[in-house]
Image (cartoon, rainbow, N blue to C red; front, side, top):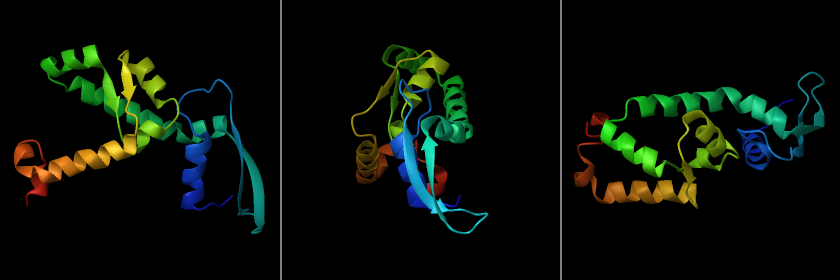
Length: 142
């Protein structure tokens, strides 16, 4: 079945998850049957979408673990005490916080508005680029 990018995003937002849900969700979608070439309606479950997202979710978990392994001891102590703060679009995926907590044994905190948080943070950096000179990537200055 062929669907558009907007439909895929809508499916992910409505029924996508990284962790088994207490009550699995279903969603009826419309697309084009690639074999017959005609429009078709299909019912998807959150379990099917979770399986489809599993490779990407695993990459996220592994990236978090790798970042934690490279974290300086002083910062690691703060993370153990305060936990990991999730921002951005990935924080909106149902159950990703639960999965990360399970995989890292650390507290996971999702901010109230993950998307807005990213934009506001980027704006603060742009307003004060000179303060962040040492941590910004070299390629940004070239």
